[in-house]
Image: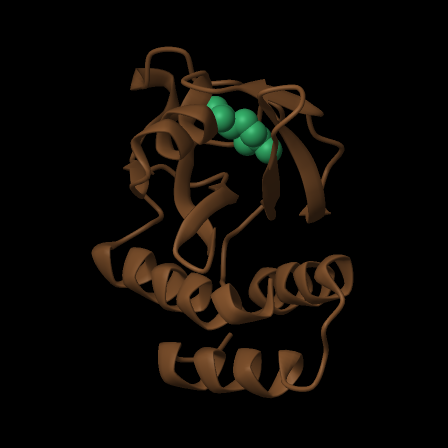
Length: 150
Ligand code: SME
């Protein structure tokens, strides 16, 4: 576990000098999964222009659903609105997609390339109300660091 500033510094150090999309997202998911406490799934859903849906990308955690339609679930909703969504209790989010029945709360943040939304970062916790405004700002700052590398 680390404080937000050191997580951001670790992320900058981790991706500096690398240019491979999959490798950067893989190591980012590993870093955040290790450093954010009480997280049971953390990874990326990436927009597929041809299929018009999100497809699971690099992640840490249990096996997850492959594809999510835009406006479906927390991920598809955050993607289509181009905004972060924090869900304190996933059972109260209409249309929530339960990949892991242990998940109780969720944070989804848009992933961008040159400011264009290309997917989402999805983080689940087995704790109700796990994610704070501070967590949201941290993950949004991570997305901002990633943007020029993607
Ligand atoms: N719960 C997400 C689906 C993805 S999994 O959590 C890994 C949703 O409702 O979009």
